[in-house]
View: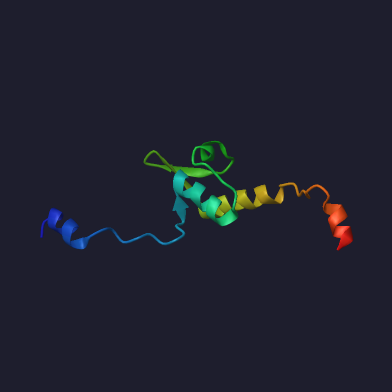
Length: 92
């Protein structure tokens, strides 16, 4: 078989695992949004203080670095209560 026939017969490339060890900016933004629940844009990823590798001109983020960043962001978030929350909790 030649290369064209192999591509036709073989179908698509095998799918990647759900969590890859390295992700590009779009995948990293989707990972943070899906796992931690706060929206993250792939364009914002460029400015974040998260280390990345550049391979063939593409930024690749390590999953461990993304987890560290997201957990630190959540840990530093302020906790708030709605208006009248103390009055409602006192009545309960």
